[in-house]
Length: 196
Ligand code: NI
Image 1 (cartoon, rainbow, N blue to C red):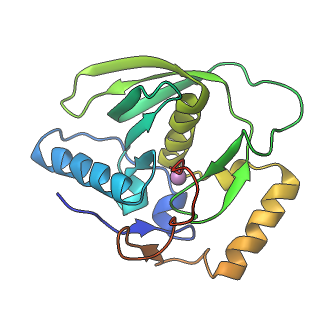
Image 2 (cartoon, rainbow, N blue to C red):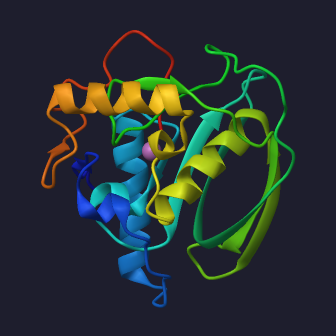
C-alpha cells in the first residue's frame, strides 16, 4: 500500500472519461488500497482513480456524518441516478465543495439532494445504495471524475470565471502537475476535511 501523487487540474487524465474495469484481481485490489491510503493522507472524503493518474472507473469514499456514523466503500463501473435538486438561492457555506485535484480552493455548487449509486464492489459483486445530503454530494463529485468532469466545470457562470482566474494565478491548469499528500503542504488549512 502506498500514497500516490494526486494529479492537479490541467492533467489530461482528469479531463477524459475513464475506462470501465474489466480485470478484477490483485491489481485492482492494490489500486483500491492505494486510493484509500491517498485519500486518508490528503485528507479527503473521496477519491477517484483518475486523480492518481489511473483512467479506470473506480472511486472510494470515507466520510463520517453528523451522528458520527462512518460511511465508507469502493465502487467499480458505477452508474448514478440523480434525485431532485432544490431550487432557490445557493447557500455559499452549506453547499461549498472542494476537490483534491484543485487543492486549497472551494466554491459553492448546487447538487441533487439524493442519489442512487449502483455498480460493482472490487470483488465484482453487484452493489447498490441510496444516499442523501453530503454523501450524495460525494457520490456526484466522484462520479463526475469518472466522466472526466471536475466540479469547477459545473459552477455557475460567475463562480466559474472566478475559479478559472484562481487556477491560472496558482499556476494550475497545465498538464503534469501533481502533489503528494503528507509531503506537499496543500489542504492543510484549518477546515473540515470535505474535499474529494
Ligand atoms: Ni475531486
